[in-house]
Image (cartoon, rainbow, N blue to C red; front, top):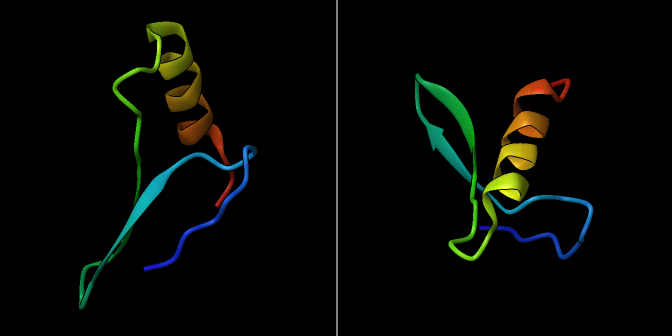
Length: 49
């Protein structure tokens, strides 16, 4: 497990599955406001791989 300490990168969990690939999951903290969560999710789906 790795961790990056940077305010510019969102918290993620990386799932690796043999034969199925990799999934990077965005972690939205419970204290996040709805507006912040929407912005984080929008950014996550529009990032280039």
